[in-house]
Amino acid sequence: MLVVASAWAQGAKPNFSGTWQLDTAKSEFGPMPPPTTMVTIVDHKDPKVVIKSTQKSDQGDVVNERTITTDGKPNINKLKTNMGDQDVTSTTNWSGSELVTQFKMEINGTGLEFRDTYSLSPDGKVLTVVRDIKSEQGPLTMKMVFNKQ
Image (cartoon, rainbow, N blue to C red; front, side):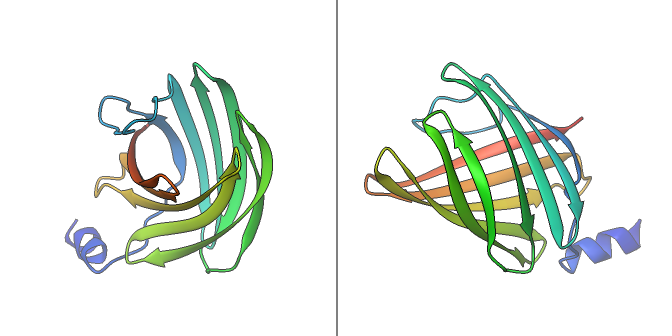
């Protein structure tokens, strides 16, 4: 147990694999309406991470699957939104025990910059994704908390 705690304290890189259910009560979406449900399945074999998200909301259902690498190299994935699909280039790097993905996209003619920071609780049962968004309307931060299924 001490070895695990010591490795964690030294910034060991966690494995985000699992099926994760959004906990809307613990999540913060700011002015954005939260999804009704969201399930994210992560298959993490560093440096490759495959993320499949299924989201249901009043605006409809959206399923996305993307493959990223943790080595900072650009990754191109098709991102589906309620407003259409688009190719998105992202880069992902480790920052200690957190995984940080950055990407840009355009929605309804508005350019958006995203920075997603993934962190795992010490017991591996809670995944938190903090999403910082920059747009012409100003910055927005959302926090999505997922429980492992």
